[in-house]
Image (cartoon, rainbow, N blue to C red; front, top):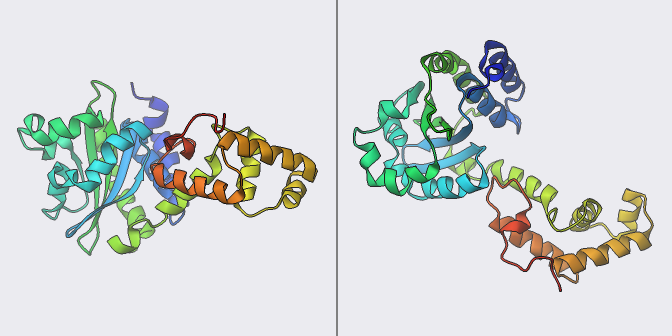
Length: 286
C-alpha cells in the first residue's frame, strides 16, 4: 500500500527541494530517488548511465544486498543487451517516462531473458525515466516495486511525467557531460570506501573497539588513540589486544590486509559490515 504522506503534493515538493539543494553533491542521487519514489509509490531505484557503444555504468541503487547481488552484476555484465529499456534507449528516445509494459515485447514474459534473469529481480512492476544528453548518452532511472500486485496508477504516472522536466534539468546540472571513462567508479568507489570503513568489523567488535580499529587503520599509535579518545595508552593497548584476538590477527599490517580483502568482496551498496562477505571462521581465533 502506498504511503499518501510521501506520494502527496507536499511530499513531492519536499523531495524536489532536497534534490535541488544537493545537485553536485554526494547525496544528490539518493534525493533524486526519493523524489521519484515519492511521486509514484515505487520502493526501489536503480540509476545507470546508458551509452551507445559502451556497457551501462551504475550510478546509484538502494536495493538490498540480496537483490543487488542477483540483479545488478548480471545486468551490467550481460543482461542489459536484452533489456527492453536498453533496447528502447538505442532507438534514440529523448526525455521520457516509460513503463515496462509499454516497451517490452509481447512475448517478454515467456522469454528466456525473463525466466533466467528478470524473474530473479523480484520485481512486479517497473518504470524508467529517461534523461537524454547531447552526446547520445542518457541517465536512466529505473523505478521498481517488489510488492505483489503493485501497478503504477494513472495519477502516479502523470505525477512522474509532470516532474520529468525538473528531473531532466537536475540531471544535466549534476552531470554537465556523461562519459563512461570518467563515470566508471567515479564517486561510487569513494562512497563505497567510506561506508565500508565506517562499518568495518562492527559485527565482531564492540563500538569502542571498532572505533579504535578505524583509528589504527588511519595510522594512529596507541598514544595518539588515547589522546583522541581521552583514555590512557594502557587502556588502548588492552582494546588492541582484544581486537587482535577477535579478528584473528597479530599486527596493524594484518588489520589493513583484512580490511582491503573485505573491501574487495563487499558489494558497492553493502549495508553492513564488509567482513560479513569474507569466508572466515566466526569469532577470529579460538
